[in-house]
Amino acid sequence: MIETFYDATTDTTIQRELTAEEIASLPELEQNEE
Amino acid sequence: MAIKTFTTGEVLTAADTNTYLANSGLVYITGGTQSGSAALNADGVFTSTYLNYRLELTAVEQSVANNAVRFNFRSGGSTNFNNTYEYAYRGLRTNGTSGDTSAATTFAEIGIYMATYANTMLGSAAIDIQGPQAAQTSFGLVNAIGYEGGVYQMRNGGFVYNDVTSFDGFRISLSGSGNIAFKWQLYGYRKA
Image (cartoon, rainbow over all chains, first blue to last red; front, side, top):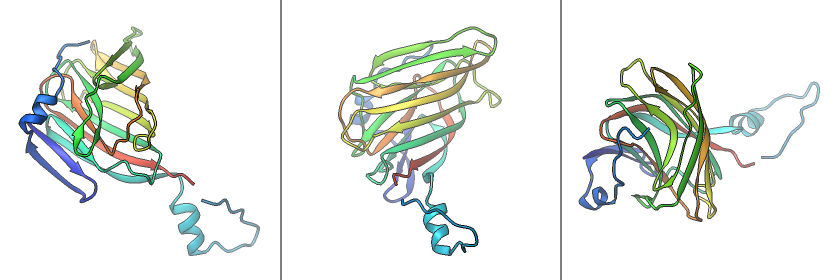
């Protein structure tokens, strides 16, 4: 899963794969929730 | 910033302009264009320079239908998914039907729900974020527009992070799978 990360201290934007730890922390996705 | 009253015939100097005009009101911090990936994670954008912020999300487009847009705070490069967010919105569609939504959960919705996807169906949100970096409860006051039931939907309301936590960034993501594209600008409310 690729996401965008913006760092204000260096004013840089990168796109990278989430780490396993970051993926594990994500809440469950809920399509059609409304 | 001190208040200065100019009198008739007084000359406005460069210093006056820099101090009293250029530094007044909302001060642009940063922004960009998000596209092609599932979420934006912005770090280091909330500092002690400002207490309150304005986040503008415009031309919000999704690659998959039936997604709501979510907001989370971030700190030290990690997203806060604590079960401490509460949000509530009154919704009114342009055909007169209502579309309220609310929850207490691990994220805050920001009022944008897109029931279809096309580059002509765009959402929008203006969020006043109060006290994210300060050691106080943080609030978001939201006006947003989405697209649901074949018509545009206006939503007004807000969210609260119901705990005292200092944050330096935020995350914008979707409730489901798919990509999201938008333009974003973050401003700080000048303190004095």
